[in-house]
Image 1 (cartoon, rainbow, N blue to C red):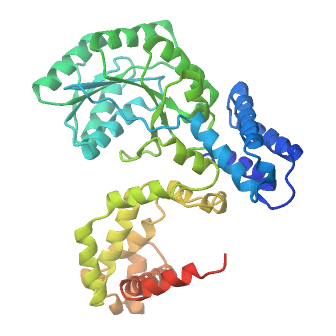
Image 2 (image 1 turned 180 degrees about the vertical axis):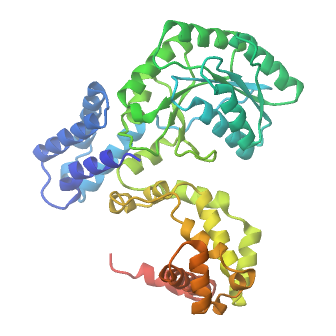
Image 3 (image 1 turned 135 degrees about the vertical axis):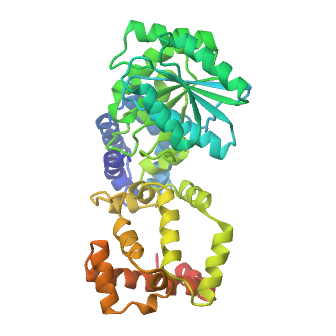
Amino acid sequence: MFNNLSEKLDKALHVLKGHGRISEINVAETLKEVRRALLDADVNYKIAKEFTNRVKQKALGQNVLTTLHPGQLMVKIVKDELTALMGNDVEGVNLSANPSVILMSGLQGSGKTTFSGKLANFLKVKKAKNLMLVACDIYRPAAIDQLHIVGEQVGVEVYSDQGNNDPVAIAKAGIAAAKAKGCNVVIIDTAGRLAIDEAMMSEIANIHSAVQPQETLFVVDAMTGQDAVNTAKAFNDILNFDGVVLTKLDGDTRGGAAISIKSVVNKPIKFIGTGEKMEAIDVFYPARMAERILGMGDVVSLVERAQEQFDEQEARKIQKKIAKNQFGFDDFLSQIQQVKKMGNMKDLMGMIPGAGKVMKDVDIDDDAFKHIEAIIQSMTPKERAKPALLNNSRKKRIGSGSGTSIQQVNQLMKQFNQMSKMMKMMQGGGGRRMMEMMKNMPR
């Protein structure tokens, strides 16, 4: 996420991060490079210029040149200004009515239908809402079928009327059906076009006027850069929407849309899509995103994701097994499944401070665990429960059954043994000793 921008900003601020002599001249040179990095990320020229001017004024106003660590203070100012540019505060969705109607808008291909399912899943799981999805895209081939598939994936009912060519009537009927079934949230998926046209804008405006939604979200593909910002402005002029959703942030996005869009339409980014899975949705935190862009990671989000997947009862069960030396491959597999649920691996690595820079050229496959899972699933229940049983002939059979080599099976055994030892050490006084060692390590 934003790897190129992060790298260029890091290079621009590199001189100031040192403890060498800092002058007004090299601050100006640094900010010139910062502006160039923003422009390369497809940030509007006017916004990039205003941004660097504000950073310069704050830097000189806070006497950065005379502080003990000028580079650190300069990075903090850049971070604070990036946060302000992207919206400062976290914005939620308005769910005050019963049912609350959420209208999705955007161009074709922006990911509206998929995101409608992600949002339904998010509100169902995290807000305990009873939802209905309404299919109002009557033009795109298979759009209604796609929404039904998405609804089935997340366990949310979908209202559609394939013989009806009036999206306003469908939207109204969908809300009526949701009320009858006791749903407290209705998400309406609307049609898009490949480009803005009068017919599309008129149709979405008519739906908006007819249903009076509590929340109107504009969904935009983050990979389209400055075009995304221009499209957002056109939609906002017609709908006066409440917030923006940025999809495909897991792709090779330059970041210009995320940084510019709030400035142009004065509407908050509310959610981001970070993958294809229905769970790949995050609330947008401007401060956390600014830290990630500057290579500081996002430990808070990483911990939150881990907590969501943490099962206290399962953890206690595993603790007992470790204490009795009964930790087996089934338990190991269970831990892998929990990690996988947290999101794609490259995104998770980007949340660890400094890891983004180290891993920038490493291609981390989302299926990085698949050969491990295949090896474990090729073991008998007895072998999974008692790893010590695995001799060479058993390993050879497991390797053949999982499509891997005996070397890969041995490597997994080594990793499993290391993890078992580490978990046992963390259970006893070793965890405390390790923490003390880490505190005393040279920085």
